[in-house]
Amino acid sequence: MKRKIIGLFILALVVLLANCKQSTKEATPTTTTQTNVDAARALLKQQSAGKIAELGKEKLSEYGFFAGDLKDLKPAEDVIPYELNTPLFSDYAHKLRFFKLPKGATVTYREKEVLDFPVGTYLIKNFYYYHDETNKSAGRRIMETRLLLHEADGWKTLPPYIWNEEQTEAILTVEGGTRNVLWINKTGEKQQLAYSIPSQTLCKSCHVNNNVLIPIGPKARQLNRDNSFVSGTKNQLSHYAELGLLTNLPELSQVRKSPVWNDPETGSLHGRALAYLDMNCAHCHSKGGPGNTSALHLTEFETNEFNLGVDKHPIAAGKGTGGRPYDIVKGKPENSIMVYRMESTNPGEMMPEVARKLVHHEGVELIKKWINSMN
Image (cartoon, rainbow, N blue to C red; front, side, top):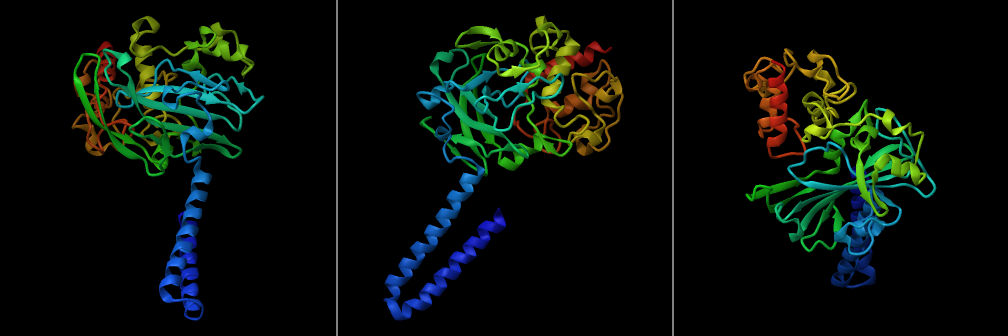
């Protein structure tokens, strides 16, 4: 893509120089130079528009995902909401998730992997902060919208759509960006963050397994929960099947259900800790993931303590060990590398290494309790 743009830029300059030479016979230097500058600019503008068309639409509103006022994020009739039991932590941002299928297409159930979405599917994720967590009626600020598109040759990340201050539109921005955000948290404390919006390239870093780009969240075990729909509150998987959108769904009692990481009523401490690690770490730390070389496998299905990090020396953690010898020391979270890296915000030490600037204090406490329970 970059070579193509550079090539067209050079072509525009060649056209400009050639026309300038011709101008000695046809017009005054001033008039001709301005004309050809305008022509070169027009050519570059046309190429820029072509680049946007290839990457995605310039404005989020052009997709027609949402009905009415865009900032309300009210899904259009063919856009389906979904929620996860244990979502990825993203600096305390809230998320609204949707998928859109091609007309007449269906999704196929899978037991462990992400559901088999058909070619042409869009996965839509919106990140936002309430102005005041203690009074959500005070409104919210939407920061960005990310899209995944399933094309014939596989899944593709589109550049993020960054929302303007007026909350009237989100614009495709290839390089990502940073936006300051202020909010009041659940305990009434004022919070401030330079919120990072990843570039298209950085988005890809978390979505690769066995060198293939895939979604992370919409697995059956994560979708096996209730959600609010226009027709009422229903189990998501059952609802999709009733709509004719999901095929091969077994009896719901036979479908694994991930616990909610911070709700003890949904699972054991061990189960909730693994659900948290699975969503926040396993996209890298799993067989086929970019972090597979660490030999640390943090999926919900892992039963081997050593693979989870118990009494395991790190392979290549560098200064990320914090001077601690093992990933997990039973009964001693203060001596465990895993906790050290979760509590760090220093690049090269912190884990996860992307998608956060803040420490997820509640998540750290969960993992500490889990390690303490091993004693």
